Each structure stands twice: as structure tokens, then as C-alpha cells.
Image 1 (cartoon, rainbow, N blue to C red):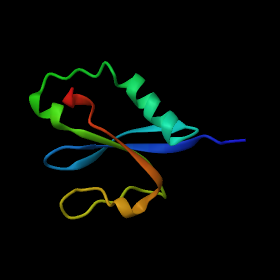
Image 2: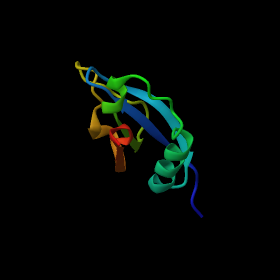
Image 3: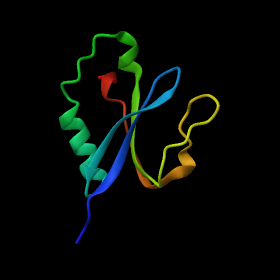
Image 4: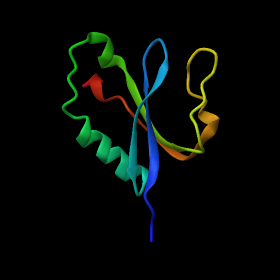
Length: 88
């Protein structure tokens, strides 16, 4: 039987990466689906936000960032989903 796991959602902007949310899900596919439903009505009024990407992944422990405030992808366990939702 599968267990709930925590998936991090990281928002990437031109300037930096930042933790956006944590989603409890059974799989990466489920975490991606939950993200799409939960944040589908996210109000986009700022043109800059339309260029943002979101990474969804499972990590071991704390998220780590480099000197440019970019997420260290080496900490990721398993797969990752990338959503460029606002480019529609």
C-alpha cells in the first residue's frame, strides 16, 4: 500500500527560486494534478508572473539553494514535473 509523501512546489522567477507550496500526495502524478486544481484560479495580473515555471518534486530533507538563490536539483529524489502554466 502506498503512503502519502510530501512533494515540494518551487516557483522559479527571473531573479530566484522559492518554495511555493508543499503537497501531500501518493505520487508525482497526483501531486501535479493537485497543484493544477488547487492553483488553477491563481490570479495572474502581473505580466512577469506569466513567465514563471513551477517545479514539483520529492526531496530528501530541506531544500538547498546556491549563491544565486537557485534550487540545488541534486537533492531531488525520483522524478520532477515542470509546469509553465502561465505561458498559455
